[in-house]
Image (cartoon, rainbow, N blue to C red):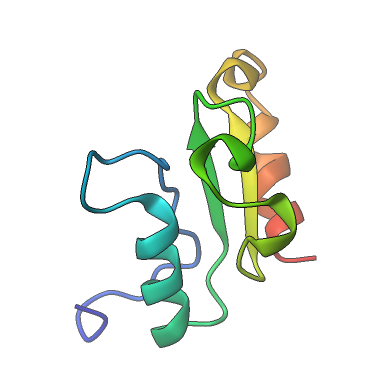
Length: 84
């Protein structure tokens, strides 16, 4: 997959259904591309509600609640914060 694309960020939801979740994808993506910024965009209050503590999020990952997107800059702020 990574041979044909070179993304800087990958925005992921957390809940994809019973088998795969955004955390699994982020872990796999970051294994291949550790420089990726990965903001999670979710309606869950925070990562703990998906069974993962905020401290265990991958390096370069962030969290944005979907309600925050009423502010057009929220995703941009999250993307910048992911790489700090």
